[in-house]
Structure formats: C-alpha cells, structure tokens
Image (cartoon, rainbow, N blue to C red; front, top):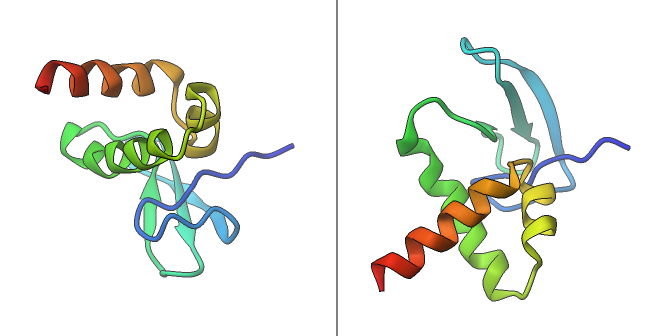
Length: 90
C-alpha cells in the first residue's frame, strides 16, 4: 500500500502523485488540484513552516501523532518536535 502525503498548499491527499526527485534526492510530489509541487522533507528549515501549519490543523482535529506523521509523509519525531516548540512558545 502506497501512502501519499497531504498537499502542503491545498491540503488535498487524494490527487497527489510522485513527481521525480529533488537535487538532494528527496521525493517530490505534485498536486493535480492546485497544480503545485512540494516535498515532505526539505534541507532548508524555512520550508517546514507549511508542514507545521498542517500538523497544527490535524492536532486541532484530534488526529493521533502516528496518523499525522503517516498522512503527511514525515517522521514521528517531527510531529513531536512541533509539539515541543509550540509548548515552549506559550
């Protein structure tokens, strides 16, 4: 079973397809709804703000940490890192 990540732009998970590799050899994805491409893992930390926004939304909806990591195509420790950062900011 191939788990496709959720689009970082329109949050759609059904019309996402693989779209080659980045220069750093990370998998790229393309959303057929909003016509934008994205990666689930970036070398540059600035790109992760989109993922953090999606994590926050999914946590508010009551999703489990494991389900969030699976749907977004990220590691579980990234979800935990976001939660720790959010708690420290408050």
